[in-house]
Length: 209
Image (tube, rainbow, N blue to C red):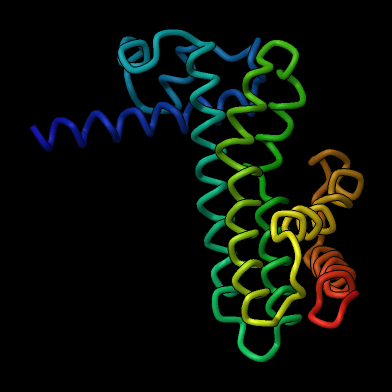
């Protein structure tokens, strides 16, 4: 029973990953279930046995991609749990890692799909937000709250601090990347992370008014 359940979970994972790859490559309208089955390495009826139609596939593929991105981004926050004596340096490293993840191919493909299909699937914005940006901001706010309690950041609303740090990081990226179509060099990502950290600490450092 356990082996069968594991196999079903693995097939579902492969289908969702295959679906996301095909949707990213073709767009929703041009994607077909047979191509998704081929990408996933399963038979077409197997796709339908897990997810009933293409629209359901799309919604679940977006959710799964957002969840994967969230796990990676949440892990990128780990250094803030024990930043040592150099909080600014830790924030720069965390910011740079978040930008690397934001600029990777899967993240760019996810944003392009959302832009392209939001009028047909308005609910996917909520799916992506609840599985991605919103929960990342909550995790970052928790770390900032702990840093404020330790006197490393000024007292204030940690949710606002998290929102502002993420905005300083991600705000410049759409224009610089031309909505995810232009690769960004690592030195440019580091410059954005450094500028975001400097601005953030002027507002939220322990001596900030």
